[in-house]
Image (cartoon, rainbow, N blue to C red; front, side, top):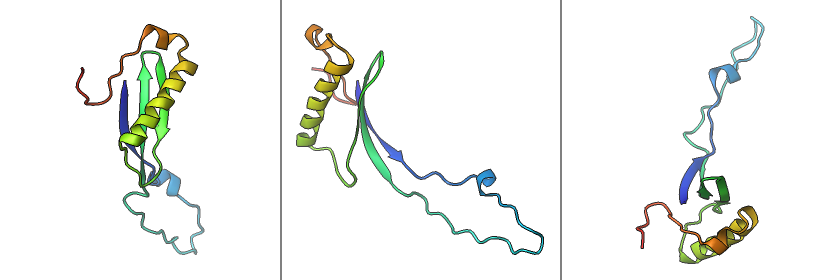
Amino acid sequence: MGDETWFHYYEPESKTQSKQWKRRDEPVPIKAKAGKSAGKRMATVFWDREGIIYLDWLPEKTTINSDYYVDELKELRQAIKRERRGRLTRGVLQYHDNTSPM
């Protein structure tokens, strides 16, 4: 199975994490207001019943096109050879996201 997903890599600081010790005569520390998100990256994940076989992080500001996907499938084939020995000789069926079965 395969799917792609967006990962947001900004985590706001919790109240507990932002606590600071100060003396009574010191002013309250000034905090910068955080933006909504620092960014996000897309990852493509392929897995089977035994776990993750291949995880690919897309370069920033890149989209998946046919050339990229073909290269990714070649990398997946190599990962299956490494991680699941003998699986390719018995045959592999792939289901990716919302693709229709043939």
